[in-house]
Amino acid sequence: MKKQFYFFWQLFLVLGVLTIPFPFRIIANFSSWGAWLSLPVTRLFSSVFFGHSVGSVKELSSDSLGLYIHVLSLAIMALAMGGLIWAIGKENILSRLRPWLNGLLANYLGLILLIYGFDKVFGEQFYFPEPNTLFTPLGQLTKDILFWSTMGTSHTYQLVTGLVEVLAGLMLLFRKSRFAGSLLAIAVMAHISLINFSFDISVKLFSSFLLLIAITLSAPNLKGLWQFLFQNKISVNHKAETTITSKKTALYYAIGKAVLLALILIEGLLPYLQAKQPKVVSTAFAVVCPAAPGSCSLGQYAERETPKRFFFHSKGYFIVQTEQDSFYDHRIEPIGNSLYRLDGKGSISIGNCEKDGVWTIEIESLPQWSGNWLVRPIPLQNLPLNRSDFHWTIESYKD
Image 1 (cartoon, one colour):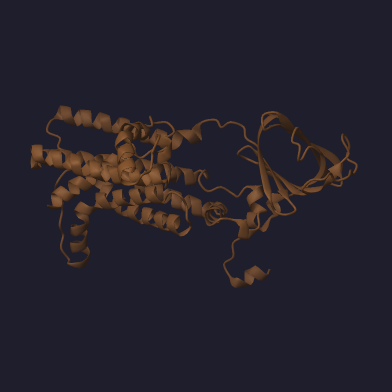
Image 2 (cartoon, one colour):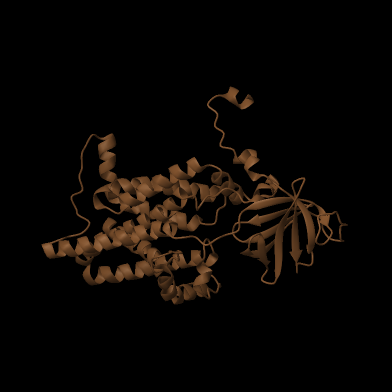
């Protein structure tokens, strides 16, 4: 009975691996294809039992109702498929499939951990807060943005947690270190799941799914670990994950494993080795007042909400913060030195008046903010949050 349950559980997780969408960057996005193939079952299940329509794969996004329903439908599919396999071949088929299912789960979890681990090591997951976030009143930030911003201020935290995830991912790729890697992955994913639930970050379902994979991979050896730690017994699981019966099979296995490892490492590392497209430099300006067109002299305010700061977001946004701490964002793209296309039709140009540190920003074709503005650059590097201070003693805070 335990073997049957473990097989059904493995099958459920494998179906999740094949059908829960994940934005792979280099490897073919097989999970989206699997989601598309399984969509009719999910659509039927959602309409019959939940009265909810799942129209496309896009509705299986992170923590969406469609994704929760999809996971429930996968459980039903796993029971049906597992029952059919058990009825046809019983232990013979189970004993052959189980190692391959475990191998697929281990390599998938290893790949995901390497992707997220390298994201942290190279500073692509948690990044220093954008200027508009830095100047948003603390009480107006949501918990997930606050957590993300806080983590982004510490390169050390990102580097250490990223290296731990990379280590766990690499250990999962090899059979001899897979059990230890699964234990490390349990610790990693338990920590991440706790963060996602505590700070309301919308990858709760996916992080829980990865945690369940890690627990499943470690399950066959947990009894032996318990006996070793608490009963002074040594119990070794001699069952190999795959059965290699000939040199020819061993050669094919080695080639396949090498190709798989290469693909996994390429998926994890190649995005950081490629030349990146130029992006908008994160900058912030404090608005002094409007300027007369084409000059740096003072002008008069028009009848509009008064802007307090202008921000240039590195993801390609021009953001206006008003005196009432409202924020308005517009898409921009660089088209020249200090010149940006605004919302596909207007433009923004930045000029330095070289007078008392005052600059000008000229905005065209944006009715609410159009005109010339006198602004003063805000030195973001001088903000306390941007300092790399470290204190060994409480007295050093007073210095």
